[in-house]
Image 1 (cartoon, rainbow, N blue to C red):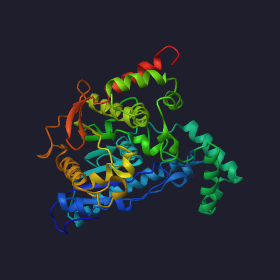
Image 2: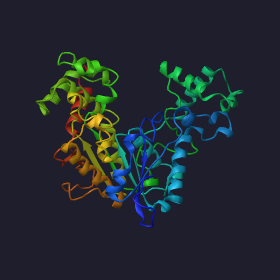
Image 3: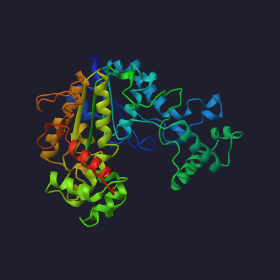
Image 4: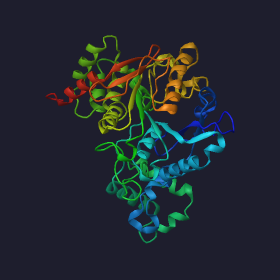
Length: 417
């Protein structure tokens, strides 16, 4: 907890949910240091840890009442954290009636999930989803099969499942890792279990539980340069000759050359590598998913939605990562000096941090991210899809990746695609 003072000022509270999917990560990461944001905005910052992977999301409901709700233990930890904030944050100068939850990547998915949970209703009043639109959770049939595989790996069955309570943590984690090596994911996200999660967060529509909660949501231009490229450096060597096949491997059923032709018409100066990462970002969970979630929230007709798009390319390592996944965190926290390995440091970096951190602080205060350092930022609707594009010169663009998504859709439906 970071606070400017222990008094009764009733400051806005910003609760950060860390990334790493639902399997890894820590709220104690240096990148999430809240001192500058707390001082800058006169707010209280809270970061939390919670159970992860098989220890937070293993679906065991099929094995008796004693295990009911096990597949959402990690989410219940987050609910407990918010209950703690409600009951105690006034002692830290925070206002329990003005709580914002925000998170990036897996943290954004956690925010999305909390927005649809009955247990979390009323515990927060604004929400921010950064590069982590959580549209769906895991279904029980998929979770049941994964759990059965883990029990088999551990030499257990329904009669001996209670031994999970006493097995060493390393043994259980090792079994889960062995399954992951064989392509079987277990305990990697919450489950629609009928106990704590009664529905998917934003499928088929926005949840009623958070209808009155304003939402700020967005993504980065090349999310996948880090997520795909860090594990496969050969992707940074793509050429116009090798690009069509790479796109067809990455996007199911697409005509790679049709995507290339369309993107190059829109962006004549784009290179093969950035075209690849932009296209797979546009069509994937982060790009398309963020607009889908914003559409569904806006269609609900409750509180306002504000959409952003982070387009600023990092100069680190010759600019190879462009506007990659997680790059925005240092700017939101006004921590570019602590995020130099991703963003570098300098006047450009600090100028953007000034703009973005002030937007998040304004949103925490009022549910509206507008401030004097930005052009007017209208609320999002499905007709215009007004989006703040963050860059050296930030500006509002209507549906900034709509043409690119249309190109991909047409190329997927094309004959031979």
